[in-house]
Image (tube, rainbow, N blue to C red; front, side, top):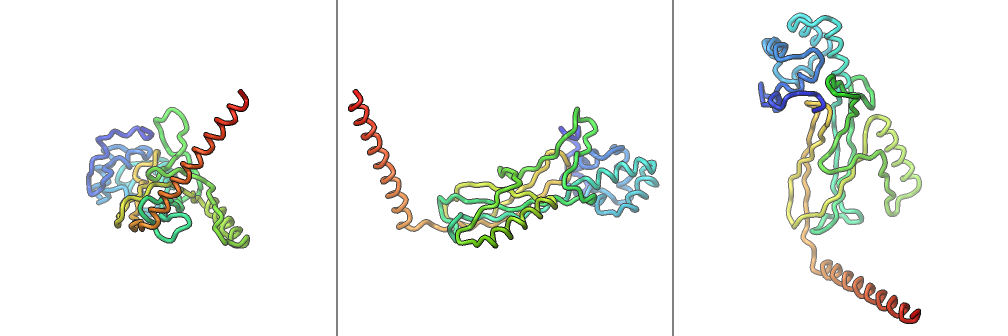
Length: 250
């Protein structure tokens, strides 16, 4: 929708799962231009981006028939397009291992790298009715610029170092993402996390993550049940006290 590219253009072609769609978001590109590039064995968007600037300029001007100004338009957009990398870990706060029924915190940094070294950019969306802000999502994680938490037993010096490190990462285009989910039953799970863009075609990326869940021991299960029963008893006592107070008022 952002790039006004038809869904049919995303059909796999030439070894690319994105088809010709990423090319069509670039200025001055059309299917006829892509046919000319294919003769020079540039069939995927990855092939095109991996060329250096001079190679692309020669390809566009000598093969595709672009003017130098049109070739420069393409280069400006490519310099804005991000390369995304991310490092995510799963853990249970306060525990060394993840067990059945634990609240698992999925936390890590997402980094955007651009050739023009900008932290943010307005995507080239020629047919969009107004300026389009770029957004990214990782599954169901929320994007945040903050999220530094103190660790039990951490010294002020360690906390200050962690904050300074986080600030530098944010300045350089990284963002902290945090998501939580309930640990499934015992077993080892191979997860795939996707970082998706709502503005750029061909920039989505993914990473694999292994999640090992241990079986909860009987003692721990009894402790949880006992805690729930104690909470219920306290609620009943509170309700009785409130009733007595109302009787005295009457």
